Length: 75
Image (cartoon, rainbow, N blue to C red; front, side, top):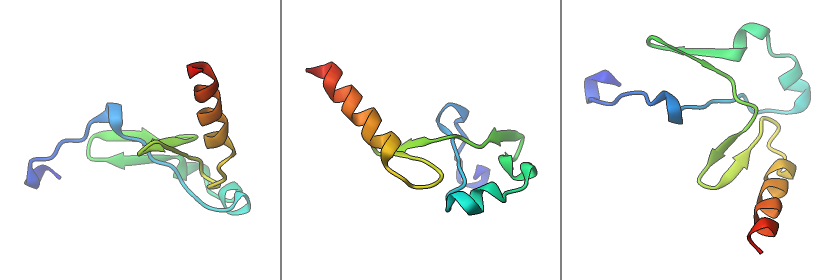
């Protein structure tokens, strides 16, 4: 990244494992952080990407809840 002049913005950097609930339960505890250069990034419970809330199991229940509660507040 540094060769191209890019810098890691820790305020905007999230990551998460995605898969079935069964496979996610089998992940080793050491897989719960990612080291990029001098930064250690913990795995997120969910991430927003272009207005969509992604969870590790890719179910949309949390996204629907977030969007519907935001809509009900706006009205």
